[in-house]
Length: 285
View 1 (cartoon, rainbow, N blue to C red):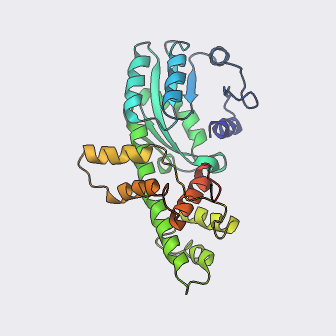
View 2: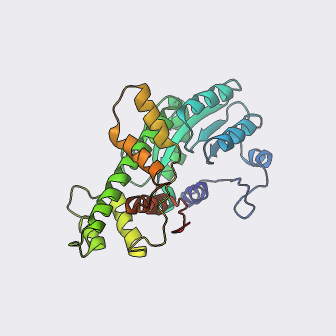
View 3: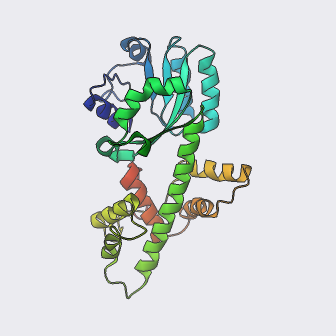
């Protein structure tokens, strides 16, 4: 995803220097050389998996960046980690923003939905980059400055929790239709829902695409990972006494997918692969 974002920025005539551990895609061989290659004051965007990897990269950059630089975490970090990173970098007079990014493997072509957390002056400074990454059109249709540090990733967490529930509803409908012998054109049914119906969406479009590529989902196992945001959304719902039965049930369904053979969970796995490039397990693995 970071590689695609680099290419989209370059297409918008923004000068980008990227570092990746994969020598086939990196522009520089190390983080110190990355920092040395970027003119000060720097804007450094971190786009790596959440958790220990993000922690190690931000910690390493905190020792390399200089006062006046701006670091942006665009991964799927938990909002509480953002607040910790903001304080750590702030003590060195390095600005910090968190940006929730949605768009998956299609973002290079279509643009990314962006949810920013941080100070207004930092968001304004990053706006040329944010505008290049988002889809064309009105800014407010694809970008929001949600609030202070942590707010962007909190909004993205809830976005992904909603995504869990939507995918689960589509997948359960798929299984119900697949089980009924009077349904003779299952892919065509979903295709006919793409225009004019109240359930039309991009996820539905990707569902049709998945069925075009593998009509019976024969090549996909029903094992579905949960990447963290669904769990965090449920934990926040509990902490704030907000009932979230659909999101919670969708998360638990992913747990059950690791035990049962489920056509519905095959569809969830197929959808995750379609929008995010998430790996699927071969059928029978």
